[in-house]
Length: 153
Image (cartoon, rainbow, N blue to C red; front, side, top):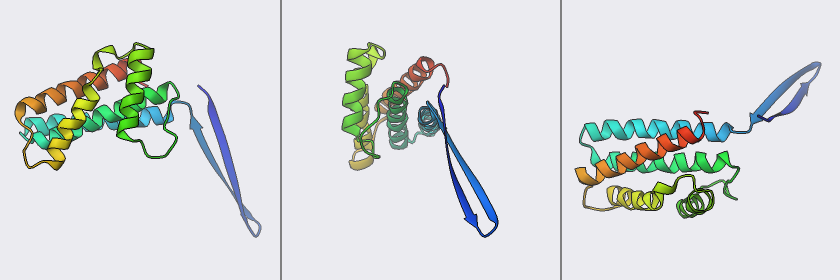
């Protein structure tokens, strides 16, 4: 694992302070995988409490963050600081499903999960138990598959 160090020295009078920053390959991957696990946990609680809209929302974002972690693990990141949903879905499918054949069972799940999340967040119609159960199952599968592929970084 490569580790990079950067430092800044602040001086004021006779006192100097050294600030040391470090980063390492995989740092963002670990952070996004942790977020994915956290959102999955909240989605499971929401489902248990019959909060199907919240379950759909958190399930989608656990999948989204797991997909970010998977892409970052192979050094693919967006060109901007904001990760666009369309970019993530297209890049995940192209790079990890079609090209590298890693997550072959997840072809349309991220797009379909976003549609359910959009229903939960923006529609008058609530997400029903069946849809919440489906998106939660996909989220579990996504997070578990990425975790296994990354060997629990």
